Length: 326
Ligand code: NAX
Image 1: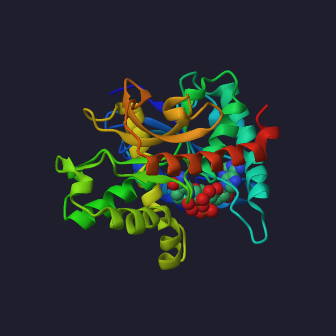
Image 2: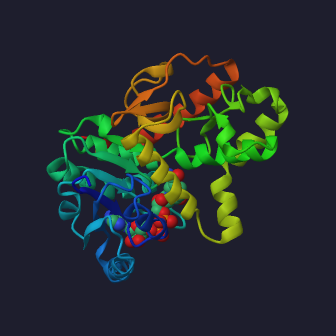
Image 3: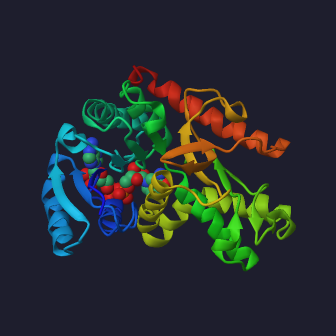
């Protein structure tokens, strides 16, 4: 058995937290041979509910769960953190402008970045799930100057999995037959779900579907799936979001398979013309605990236009929180 690693989950008493913690503790994220210590961060008013979640985690008697620390103190939560899942965020309230939402979240992700900077492992892997995820990840990273920016990702994996599922359903293929899907840019409705390099059972995806369906049906369905879930369920995606977070972290920690890539929002580094300064959804492979952006994919004019639009939105978000980045 390996020695335990510390996993910090914020917003741990929320609905994604409830779907996430039990899977981490059962070994779905880091493997059945990796014991974990769970540090659970919540705001003070939610500590009672968090205590209940902790009681249930204990009641599962998970063999891999070697420690459980609920707290409302960010420094305690991120002390010796090896993996951070930053789920807790400020929801948009009625009448709130996008700019206000970005700033309010800055008040959460700035201090959490500082706490990570102070106490986390120097090769910590931080996945930001709380929305607006890309810009929250940017704020956390900017407030953690001693940690390499590549320690911070934001989650595109739910969009990626939704795209795979939609394409599988349309073509009658199994989800495991689908590869080469990318979600570029922001985890928002400007994201670009790209099927131009996707394969279904080894054949070009676009030879199996018509372009009209791709552009007029598939893209908006994937972009607006979150809203469709809220409409149907009366609550936002939770179990699927938790499952996507598990997938993202597992690939980052344990690697992707063969030449298969996944979508991850990572610090832009100039790849595909996206200059540094934003967290951008890219096709990535992972090995030895590091991600790498897949290079050399051809982008047609349609793809370039869509990627430029989602980049513009991320630059606008950045401009709204510039004061929180130093
Ligand atoms: P909930 O409202 O159920 O839970 C959020 C929890 O975070 C609450 O328990 C709250 O007390 C806690 N919290 C708030 N501020 C905190 C802080 N400063 N420190 C620690 N905890 C704090 O929301 P839930 O449905 O779990 O969603 C969480 C976040 O995920 C939201 O921002 C949501 O928009 C985002 N999502 C992101 C997705 C993605 O693909 N990136 C998809 C699903 C989801 O919509």
